[in-house]
Length: 306
Image (cartoon, rainbow, N blue to C red; front, side, top):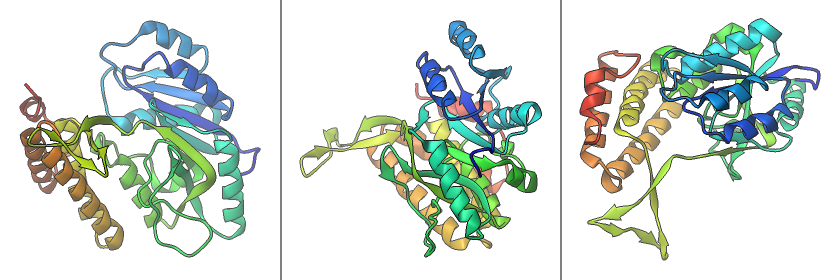
């Protein structure tokens, strides 16, 4: 990636807050163009979208189709209008650090000179903390399971491996895509000095028998996800395991182990524990049955806290 290569950012939105305006303004300083895709917001702020239309190409989906469909729509629009060499995918609650794109370009250029087939460049750190890495001995690190937000994707690689998998709807969309890139011989290198600011989720107090859990005097939190999200996590994890266990066994087994630990923490210390447990069981069941797409309405209703 040279500094002459064009970069278009694709930003997914859902009921975007007003502060997304400033994020897009700052983003435009580093990329050539911006596409924002609203994924069927049920209560959109029209004033926010009017301002966005002055700064970006705006796509508004009529219904919520999931993160993969939203990003794919943005990627396809970007390629049709400008044919960029790279697309940067982002969530509305993420923001790239200063010189992110320039740092990614420099890292990719060095990797290319070293003979590495780069499919994507991902952040080196999230909120200043280094991401978990795949084992490797070369100078170009690769993230273990990089999330899609903050990933700079080669459009040439997209031509070879295809777009994001819309059948997953949400959760594990990034994991499946990065596994597919590796399957086709691409590396997903971390960009030196590339940091992504990202909201980790809704923090809830970690409690046992109603008492706050502390370690060394520090109160701990659980990052809470709604039961319907946990359903997708469990279901799509089964799909990933079936698809990539034989070709990428170490990666799959570690990912399943980590996700199992996170689920155990959620149902032990978080709120709505029985609903979360039901979500995991139903997700695994539907994964084994090969069900895909949006969560069935009856299951979503069943998993909704009263």
